Length: 343
Picture 1 (cartoon, rainbow, N blue to C red):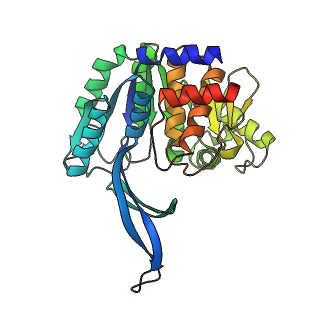
Picture 2: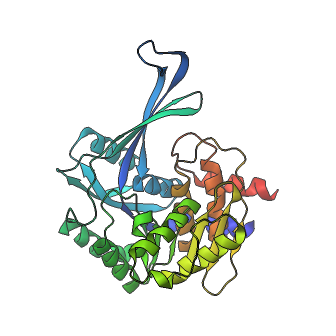
């Protein structure tokens, strides 16, 4: 436990760059006591409504909650939602100079209606661009190039909304590797082939299954991915897939999240490691992946080896799934969870 606490004590001295698809999450909470006479749907009486940073913005928010210094790079629209998101991040102490206004696209906003701790419906407001259909502004490349030297690690948070393109990934990877920076990716299924030669990626089990299928279908080098099935139903299949994806993408490590089964860490030249879940109750899994990649990356930047970093990230994920909404974990919560587990 002391080794974990030493890692946590170094979080505040680390500077992390987050690049990705930023989202504004809105939550409307209420109660249901009757069905609408207009249609067979529940009537939700609103009791509370609030906004939180989502997507890559939630990754940045998690890093700030853990005490790190954070700069975010992404796109927002010239609209009220963009201003709300930028304001919320600024109030948390996130450097938002890398948030660029795109007048052609609205700020992505996801509205969730929740009653009796159950999500009733989600309403998405977005107009995303497909990779290659909209050019990344040159000023974004300039900002990254000028800033990257002062960061200890870089996170690419890919929500498939159009910002993370092969061109951007190649540019960021080249800049990060030239400066010997840690680079971690939260992947999107369709984009796995983009992420070669980064430090690590953090897919969940479903993303890993879909990625295997996608790589076999789309990649000319698909035969090099020596996995016969994309159905990962047992430990042997999961281990084989993790090892093969790590090898195929030439990664230092691959951290697969397995829900109630915890996580599995694959490192070059090492036996896969199972990390059992520490979650006590599961209310909402949204935001768990953001907490995991934030804590894993920050722990590596603070000097943890990959196994210890994954174990610390597992505690963070366990905290978040016990809450409603994509809520950032704090360093105090994380320290307490680790202490309670080992006491």
